[in-house]
Image (cartoon, rainbow, N blue to C red; front, side, top):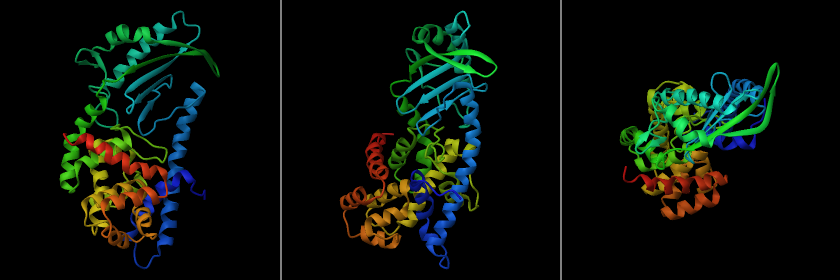
Length: 368
């Protein structure tokens, strides 16, 4: 069995330590942890096998592979000869097209391929159930990109932006190809547009779970920049970056009382993702840290646990993984002291910064 790498440890902590308070009394925590690590590594191995097959197809065409991340969605189309990248954090879209080097007018060939690709991108509902690019690309005035104005947009706006690469890509049994690239921005307030789109769902589940909706907004902003197609290397999926084999399974059981591991397709759906993500936050705040009296302290600990696990949060406050002791310790501290302890003692720099990011970004959504 392959040992978990250092990169995987924050996520292993998430799936093992967060549910420490529910481990059966006759099973030691160390035995439980080993069992959960084995399950998690098995899940990662299974996902990697499928992903690597896809990666090899792309490498055969491009000689390189650029994959999706939490905040950048990458798609290679059906024939793997066009690569679209949507950067939901920076607000830009880039499209690269493989064109035969022998083509008399490579840019004309590329334009026709881009038109076809953009029409697919703005009309397809994707696994999210709704098009994430709706209202995200400005064409003229207040008009945004749609299937009907793609041709005009490409001919008038993108034609002068196209660049022909000097790089030649050779493929077995196929003529040499060049890359034609173009990049264009999303609307200036692209992130706000997406946040507004998910506002009703966030407010609904926040009320149902007794959560501050601005914290939920802050978590989603930090996890995915409101990219419903977010996929991390773990892999975790969707707006709130849920790992199916761990947090997803626990949240599904919490909500539906069934032991089911949700699929990636299920988690790409924003409604499903926010439902399970808020359930996970509620499980942490309102059950594991229910003994914490100060609301701000409870949210600080909950947000940190969402990233690194409740056990690590408890250890940062007390040196032990006991959630009860952590709550008792927090009740002896001010919220500022809890925050300082988390920033100083949490084991991963990512989590130390994560808490600050979530709460600073949550302020942006007080008016929504």
